[in-house]
Length: 127
Image (cartoon, rainbow, N blue to C red; front, top):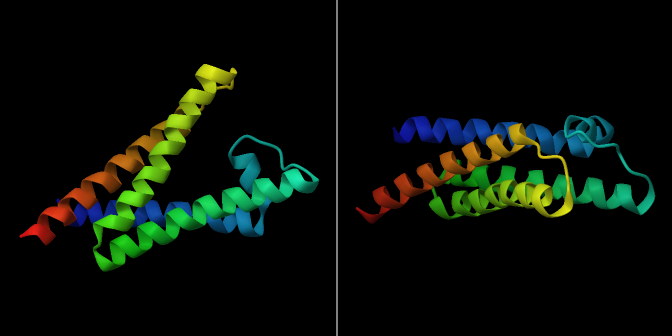
């Protein structure tokens, strides 16, 4: 089971790494993938900067956690990805935003995989 969780976590990291590269190299395509237009001016700077940083950070945390078999970076990635799902739901409830159920499902499932793998690693490190 630990090996399957490690593989699933690594695949999630690769998927998020592809999103990072897309935001870095082809931001209009990356924005369209998330159902949004690429903004202009300072809005574009914030949009590209923030989304690139989000996906880059997730990629690095997951990659490091999987490579080094360390639970802490995986837990940080879980928090970041899980909070994205939470705030998507809250934006729909509080601000009349259209809910993106597929995105929420991917974020919740990814968070669950990361949490499960981190928990396994913590158990194995504890003895």
